[in-house]
Length: 376
Length: 257
Image 1 (tube, rainbow over the protein chains, first blue to last red):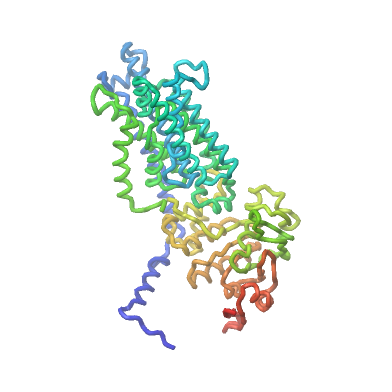
Image 2: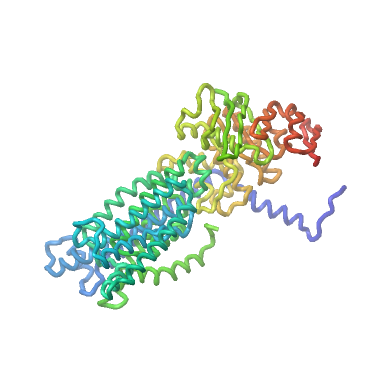
C-alpha cells in the first residue's frame, strides 16, 4: 500500500524540523567543542574575578560611608599606615567600620555557601538556613538569653546571647542529623523535619515573647532584624576559621556535589557515597549557618538568593558555582551594609529588613529575565 | 581478561523478594549480553547488585578470580561502569559538563587539555556534538539517554552495564546507540550487558541472551536458542512466533494469548 502524501507538506516540515534539532546541518567538530568549553571556562574565571573586584569596591565604599565624614584617600591612608591616624580616626576606622565591613563579607560568604550546598544536597531550590529551622532555633536561643537571662553555657559573659543562639542552632542541626541517621537521608525527610523545627521554635519564641517585658521584647525584635553593629575583630576571626575548616571539604567534594545534581542514582553510579556526602555536607552547612546567624541575627534571603544568582550566571558546576555563591552572598550583605547607613544619614537600619526590601525586587527581575529554567 | 560470573544471587526489598538465587554463566569479554524479561523481573536490581550499589542477601558476583564484594566501592566502580535507567536532570549543567564529570571520575579540580579533547571526541562520535553547550534540563528523553550513554562509555572499564539505553530513542538512534555499545565492548575487550524491552533489538545485537523472570534466570544462551525456548512465551504471557527477516535476522512476533 502506498503512503498517502500528507496535505500542506506537513511531512516535509517534520523531516526538516527533526533535521534541525537532532542533527545540525554541519555538526560541530571536536575542536569547536573544545573551543566553546574553553571559552565558557574562561568566562567563568573572569566572572569570579570580576565579582571579587566588585566586592573589594563595595568593602571600600562601606568603610568610607558613615556619619563621620572621612575622605576616601584619608581612609585609605589610615588603613595602610595606622600610625598616622588621630585617636578618633583610629576608633572609627579600625574599631568600628572595618570589622563591620569585613563581617558583612564573611557572613555573606558563609550564608551563600551554606545555601548553595543545602540546595544541592536537598535537591530543593528553597533550601536555606531558614528552611531547616536553624534561624528560628538561633532566634529562640537568643530570646532565651534576653528574656530569662539564662545562658546555655555558663561563664561566657557578655557574649551569652550569641552563644545561646549558636548552641541552640547547633543542637537543632544535631537533632536533624540524628533523625537522618535513624530514618535514612532522604531530602524530603530532612526538609519536613526542618520545617517541623521551624514551627516548633517559632511557637516557643512566641511563648517567650508573650511573657517578656517591653524592653526585652524590643531587644528580641532588634536581634531578629539582624545587625552588623555587633561585629568585632574576634567575631570576624571566628568566622574566617570556620570558613577555613569547612570550605576545603566542600572544594574537595565539588565533583561529587556536581554529580549529585544529576540525581542520586546517577551520582551513586559515578562512585559517590550519597548518604555519607549528605551527612558531611549537612554538618558543614550547619556549622556555617549557626555561626553566621548567631553573630548577625536572622538575616533572611542571602542564603537563598546568593546561590540562585550564581546558578543563573555560571550554572551548577561546583568549580564556578561554589566560589560565585560565596561572592554573591558577600556582595549582597556588603551592599546591604552600605545601604543600611546611606538611606537616612545618621541612622543605621537593621540589615534583615534591607536584604529583603532591596533584594527581593532585584531577585524577581532576575527570574523574569531568565531564559533558561531550572528546578521544574 | 576475566569473565563475569553471578552465582546464586538473591535480593529483597524488605519482604518483597526481587531475585531468588539467580545464576549467570560466565560472561566472556568482548561479547555483548542482552538481558530481557518482563517489567519488575529484576533486571535493574541485577545491574545494581553487579555494580555494587545494592548488597545481595546471598550469592556472589565475581570478575575472574576476584570476588567483587572484597573491592572498595571506588575500585569496584572503576572496573564496572553502570548506566542507570533514568536521570532526573533539572540541573544547570551543560552536556559537556556532565560528560566531563564522568571523564574526571570525580577526582581532581583541574581539567587538562587532554580531558577536554577526550570529552569533545566522545560527544562528536556519540552524535551529540551539537548539544555540547545545551543544559541537561533542556534535553528530550532520548537526548538525555544518548548523553548517559556517552558518559558511560567515556572511561575504560572491565564491565559495562546499560539499563534500557534505548527506551526513549527513535529507530535510527536505537540502532546507532546499540551499534556503538557493541563496537566499544568489542574494541575494549570488555564485558557488556544491556537490558532491553524490545526483543527484536535483543535478537539483533545480542551475542548472548539472558531471560530473567520470577527472580531467576529462566533461559540463557545464543539468541536463536533463547527466543525459541517455550519459557519466553510463558514468562511474558503471550504467544510468540519467530521468523527470519530479509537479512537473516530473527524477528519476534508476539500475540496476546
